[in-house]
Figure 1 (cartoon, rainbow, N blue to C red):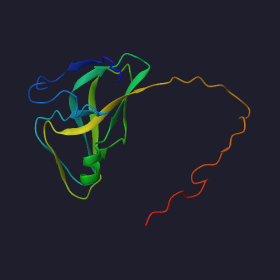
Figure 2 (cartoon, helix red, strand yellow):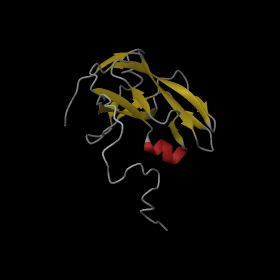
Figure 3 (cartoon, rainbow, N blue to C red):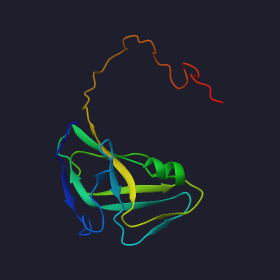
Amino acid sequence: MMIKKIDLKILDSRIGNNFSLPTYATSGSAGLDLYACLDKKITLSSNSTTLIPLGLALHIKDPGLAAIILPRSGLGHNHGIVLGNLVGLVDSDYQGQLMVSIWNRGKSIFIIEPGERIAQMILIPVITAEFNLVQDFEKSDRGSGGFGHSGRMHTYS
């Protein structure tokens, strides 16, 4: 396991007292749980979105890293609560408050409580690309075959 130190700034004095810092739930967790830093609960109606502050900022610094914010699988499966932008990206040079766009794609209202775990964040390596302009590509087995070009692989009943 590789540990990387990331600068974290607390923007809301309730973080660390009433609300948790980002935490790994278990020793095997890949994602850090992120907590809603709210003054009061928010009622999110079906098919609506809201922006939830986390009360903190981070500065990754290393351009070889980025953070990805992902939905929590239980909230998504059980309640239809996912991210409004599906996946959030935090660039290494961003230093503003972290916010999470929450979308209720479920059929019922959902109440977000202050301090509730609403998303998770992982750090990922980033490869910076330089493009090599070509007239044609070398042949590959796939070529330009797109969606479904190889047929249906599995049948489930």
